[in-house]
Image (cartoon, rainbow, N blue to C red; front, side, top):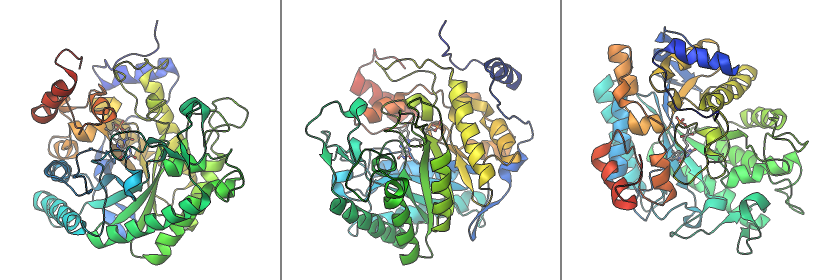
Length: 448
Ligand SMILES: Cc1cc2nc3c(=O)[nH]c(=O)nc-3n(C[C@H](O)[C@H](O)[C@H](O)COP(=O)(O)O)c2cc1C
């Protein structure tokens, strides 16, 4: 019998029973009041523990500026009540975009971003009162191996990974000089983000994109950015240091893969013995240095969505034509929670946003609250759930529970849309737009 099963729990006890059978520790409490406690990030105080994770929409204008769809998405988040809104991956250079419609902040479109921030903040205050000021982070990225700036793949990497790249001759390997230039572009984008009114910028160092690729560039030779731990972490640490010293009032965050799930010498946070075992030695050392260099917030995640999506986003249904994982989704949730807990316990001085909650549907608040109470995480990050149910925090504030009919069902339709290069959102719960687009693109017969 397959170990992978869909969500089928009628109550919290059934969920905990299953976790017990699988030998996984899932924290759980009926008292979710801690999720409405304030929490500080450096000098800022946030009104609650809910965070919208960064989620690319592939729906910006081709100059990177926010379209009406982008405004709609972020205004839905604002009206939903999360204390922290993490804006999606925005490319620092046009060639590093994952799609022609990826977000990108430039001098020319700064005005539109100012407008977006202003509207998001004022709409949140209007709904929740003058003291509710959502903390807005912009994620900065270069898509590296997954760059597709105008529709066709244009991979640009720190080094080749045979199981991802095969013997693809057209892959571009960055020179050190090109990486130096890109580092400057991260700093320039951070300056623009500060002018636009973001509270913080995030350097995306996860999911196999360029900065994550660099952390695992064990095989890159004759380069200050490859080989040893200090070379592999140089790009990220120096970027953080430079942004911190040039824009001291802008807070800094890193979304970090603490386990890539690719065997050595191709994965960060993975044992060097050739197995797929987790080894948090390097991630821990890196976090210690990030904090020293001015990073005041972390968002932890795992895996590579293009290779092993179940590690970072446990789901009921895989993408069409993708394999069903050989583990129970709760195992994936447990791994995300436990590895995050280990880091949060080591670094109690830095707030950490956790990942892995959407698969839990209506029980994510009980699990998240228990994790916060245990000191195992500071903010409950919600990705696909935010597409499906952006007003989950508001419903919890008003009624103390979630509406089962609004929760994310982890069907992977949002991932299928984006993988095919289309604008994305929730096909099940935001039907008026995305159900139609899903069947327009894939045909009515495709399963949901
Ligand atoms: C359509 C889609 C777009 C995403 N875009 C981003 C992104 O821009 N940056 C990022 O760090 N993660 C991105 N992710 C990953 C999510 O932020 C999150 O880590 C993942 O969905 C797991 O959280 P969840 O279980 O709450 O959905 C994306 C995921 C999906 C499905």
